[in-house]
Image (cartoon, rainbow, N blue to C red; front, side):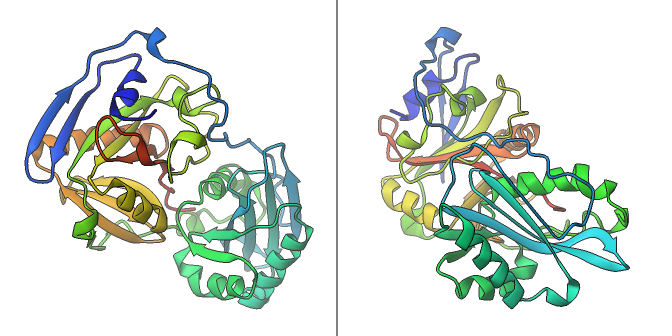
Length: 353
């Protein structure tokens, strides 16, 4: 069971003092510390760590493919964009495709005159024909390429889903920007970091969540990263309609993952709604004092306003996320003694990829 007290049972190393904040008033709840032996073990199915793969040969060869022992997924992740490399004086354009478990990584360079929906559709279709596990969903996070990718996928027997829940792809792109592109002939540092999400001057305005779906209170909490690793208690079997994202194996296993627990009498409806929005992250806008749900490619939903004390909790939440490369979680449940209707382990996609 993953109700609130089960969550606190997993807090094996330190005392967790959580703020239960109604959206109009504040309540506090302190939890007693537990010994490390209080953490139970035995679960088997967990978020799959991302394998460190080497497709890093510094070249602009036309096509590359690598597979791993990870279990294949029906959920693929796709990117098509220019890279900070010039080939014969022109930008290098690449199609990168993987699945949510990182069971394969496929790369194809596109001539600049073939950067269109027709060529992309043909590339995806050919890969689908060869795949042992066909995709049912293909996610893509690149807003600048929305029209082209959306048109290409609409002509295939898959669901194209604009989403920042492309963690395996983001991990791969980070590796290539760090280890591959800088070592390629024609690399231009001035072109790096120009891709990604909203600019530093973010003028987006969060959309108010539907009143019928707003939680009555929430808590800033933390859980050991070990609970999400093999042998941990949080698995695909006990997270409701939620999802567990892949975990970078280089993160320290003794670290704590920051998160938010949302309590609502309409927990089932709220969890279903979050699942349908492609929830990508929770963020605390400390300047505007907002707790925000990040969804699809660039949508923001306002969950709550933060007072001074909540703002301090939000600052600790953001610091904890930064320490684990954006990893965090959100849990939705009806009450303290209820199982979660949805539990999401999330990672913010970094900008500049």
